[in-house]
Length: 399
Image (cartoon, rainbow, N blue to C red; front, side, top):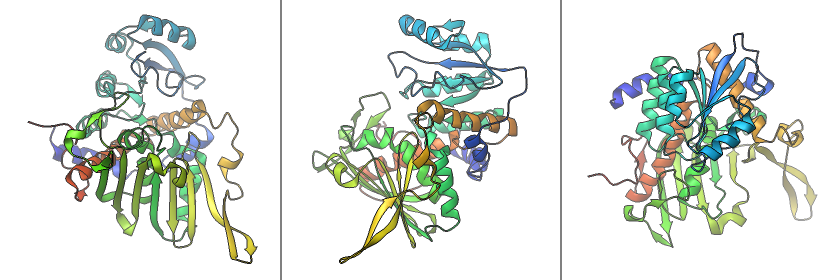
């Protein structure tokens, strides 16, 4: 598949409205007509197992019947079968797909080394796919899956749960209504824990950049400084992450993206910066003020508001606005089952309505592209234009 073909097939995805069914996702979805859709789960105990609850995404969903699961590990497979109360289990996911011919498939392993093969196999038997993040190891893999899904009329959803959280949907509307005035910049920081640097960028940056695109549109270029042990990195510093998510680089990253409409985005991941920058999340700065989005399964939104006047002047504090969903969400609403259900509801609505899901495979590819742009810019020590021309992994040597 050449790049021109990919761009032609994917161009329509970029124009998909953020809201295309997102309100329905937040409030529930209409019951799917009978007969029920046949669903299956692909897990891999010992290799990322079942991700963040992706074995349970079909629980209690009207009009969906879980018919089978696959797991190569006998002990893990038996535990999963008991937990999920599914009748048929397989050691080989390809055999399961061939025999069961499911209409819906959850690709659950957290590690990305087999995502491409699993998602492709599911699409090839005619299934719609829900996939754990990060979507794939390379952009070439993501491109191929997006094009394959488009050709076959299948819908891919990726577990970027924050994008359809009620707090994010409301913030998106408030920004469009001018609550911050003109958006000027977005300051993003990772968790900056023991994974600070390259692993933080991949594992958590995939969520962050998905939200950046939601609020600020497409990036134009990226520049980055990546350090390892206090020195500038080179390609020779690339290493494997603690989980199989592809090669990573650096323990300190400071990257800048130029977005459309003069919006600048800065991403930082440095372990020694964690206490100063605060929790994983982002700050959006506009001409009328600032708002913080604290990333979590259910993101929290805080606005910089006046808190009174002292002798030294005005005191401003970060507080939720009245009616802010994250301020009143229950423990159940904040959990992974509810977060996955919001994505699943929109995914199923997208299947019925023949549109792209909000958390689409295309959106996941674009988030991965921003991650790879950081690595590419850090190695080159220069500006990298987006979309990226090179669709392989920027940290893998080529002969």
